[in-house]
Image 1 (tube, rainbow, N blue to C red):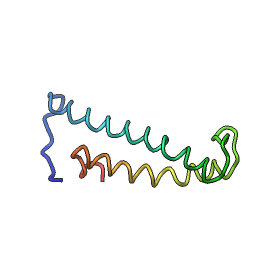
Image 2: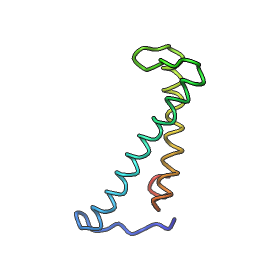
Image 3: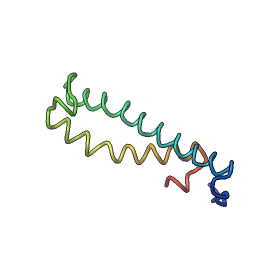
Image 4: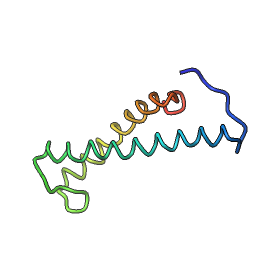
Length: 88
């Protein structure tokens, strides 16, 4: 993706750009949780596992695995939105 010149602050193009960025962050956060939580429950064979109720292996793996998955998905969705350089 080619680097774009920054639009003038508080212009229509600036608001549009920040709208794209906020949408990418929102979709990434939601989809990473939607994918990771059920996958961890299935992997650990704990259908009732949660951060609140445990078990500790679920809590630990959730924290450890969610960050790299989120980062990869952020690059993916950022690229789809045409903003790879900002999110990479």
